[in-house]
Length: 59
Image (cartoon, rainbow, N blue to C red; front, side, top):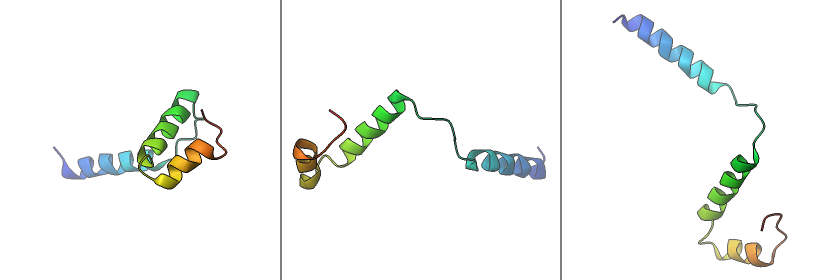
């Protein structure tokens, strides 16, 4: 296999994956992001207070 061709293919793939995804988020995408965020901050007492008593757009 040609090393230069392999390097060129890898660089092409890097350029493709560097382009931001401009598709709108679906409801399931937002739900997954919110769940991941809540899981990350679940141990924070401030987050639990905010989640219980703060202004929140999610149930």
